Every structure is written in C-alpha cells, then in structure tokens.
Image (cartoon, rainbow, N blue to C red; front, side):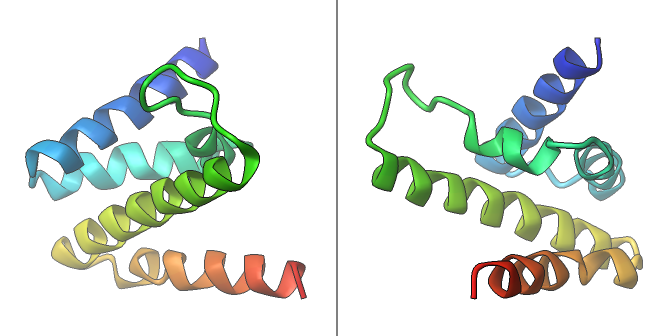
Length: 102
C-alpha cells in the first residue's frame, strides 16, 4: 500500500512539474511524503520515462535530473509557504551525497 502511495505521489509531483501546478501546500505535503519514506528519493531513479531500459550511464544522468527536479520543486514550494528549513533540504541532500562519494 505504501509503495503504491509513494509511486502515486511521485507521479503526481511529476505531473505538477510538467503542467506548472502551483499549489505549494500540496506539493510540500507530497514531497514530505516522498522524503519520509525509506527509498523515496531512490524511487525517482527507478522511473521509466518511455518504458525502455536505459544504459547505466544514461540512466544515472536521468536519475540525477529527476532527483534534482524533485528537490527544486520541493524547495521552491517550501519557500513559497515560508518553510525555509525545508527549503534547505536540497542543499543538505546534495552535500551528503557529495561527501559520501568522495
């Protein structure tokens, strides 16, 4: 049930980005749902844009962009509703990822 809800939240957030949806409260709620579930960010990298299997390097590039787009969407919505601490989540996640791969 949680896996399906996580997938739904990610799909809705992607649709919101594509369509320019600007309900910041809803975006923050769904974004927090993704962040609070173990593997939520990783699930972004599992999305298939066109149903095809991609080569590892290309898949890594796409995964990075999906994660970056998600974090940017969440940060922007958080700033919009005054949740500045949440808005800093993107920089914290990227800093942790960078330090882990040094």
